[in-house]
Length: 148
Image (cartoon, rainbow, N blue to C red; front, side, top):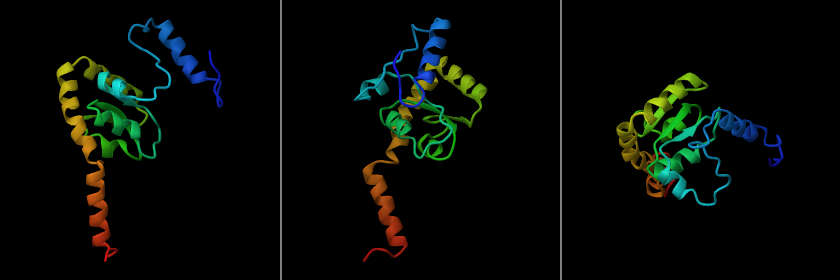
């Protein structure tokens, strides 16, 4: 097992042990660092964000931009802005592991719902496209009288 600078990979090692103990190695894979996540996002069934805090969840935005539905804790800041709840993914109460489990299980057992969410994921991410953000900034600057 490899070392890491802050906790000697304690979390990663614990998760790998859990996967091994539960005989889940056929469907839970640890891929390590990936330079380009395009293939990961485009072949994943679901993106899951379990952070307690995010400045802005770029992983969610990237996943949605690739058409990957997402499930996330409804935390400050970002998930509720990125995920259109029950349209491009699901938001669950922060820290509620049972709700997270139930939501993931329901989605993985309902391919039609996953496809429906995937079909809307890129639209949800488009809110943050360069063109859309530029328009919002321009409108803000005009509204505040900061343009000439």
